[in-house]
Length: 383
Image (tube, rainbow, N blue to C red):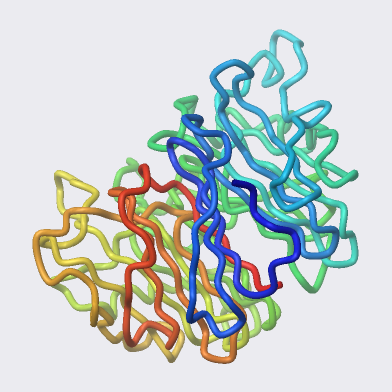
């Protein structure tokens, strides 16, 4: 059953290994119902709704079409494939000799450009649409950058567990300023709408590289730019939790490892990162076991969210309502998000197919849905 375009309330889009599911709540978030699946049996890496136009985009890997983007302008009642989905032109001898394995991440452009979208792919590629997702063009400033292969170190594995371009963030205060994350590669930024790029990894550990202070080659897991505070950026990295504040003294371009303030028995390794929509000092993370074997599960089988109210100086454990033991799941990089309510709702989906939510900023948790397929992404919007 398709989601109804007349719905008023909270909408949660859940991308999974076997399709897209839509969770709908009333304006008070008290009553929930599930609709879908759309694209049953197909991989949905990411699904995002454009509040300005009502268009929903789904980054999918369909069995008969391969990696592509689907569009709906009626809230899921009908779908059409993009006329020209993200794809490297067939030119041999450079980055354009590659083919897209997955369209992994889709992001809205600047609010002043309501029909602009960006997409990140595997192998690492950046694409832009100026017509609300109908057609996509290569951002050649990145895809044909002379240092691109050096940045990436030759990695071309496919997500969800391999190399990809993700975490596309357009600066809300400057439409020409774009941040991207690359696993592997690091954080990069452009100040001219993607024509030129530079690495932004100073201060980040790189324990797996020969040079721990390398300029690039890092492995960010998730990058978030605060929507209301200029030049405040956070990332969950393979080597910790970091904050960048360019307005602070000495903060012009160096990351601070705020994850060192997490409890030592928990550590600061994980995949997702969630920011409070209004308060630039409040954020949430979902830690996972980051020991040497990297099991990619909750620490000791006890899932927990940690919140900081002071930009990472201190952290509070938030696990009331979550399984107390023997819960061996984790949460992927785009599978945790926040809504815009006065008491912010936090949502995450697990690798074991559970959807969890807190409607009091993490103090109490409840399970919204069980037995979904492996969850890749969670996005929320209030209509």
